[in-house]
Image (cartoon, rainbow, N blue to C red):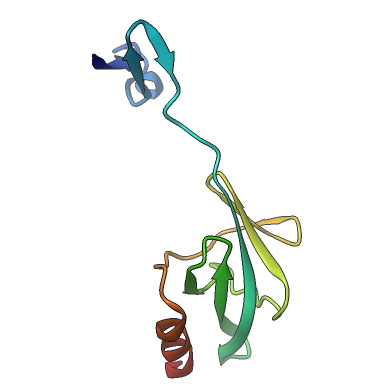
Length: 119
């Protein structure tokens, strides 16, 4: 039998009000529902656009899960082809520096090529 219980913080503490955990209880055993996610992405190609003072770069990336994507970094950093970005849990890194990627979707190889060429 699977039971989910939601634990709420104190009503008096605003920070605690928004915190909660979901705990799965299976036949008297506690199970964690969170697992560590590690993904690497090889930078296949980069293209820089924009003006001198405000450049932005797009990157075609092949991830370790076999999917591809077109990604941009929020601050405008341009990654070099052949280098690697990494995701460890919810944080992205490039050359051991934490970065913030704008949202993206996973694509198939052909679609990632097409979209990259459209820029």
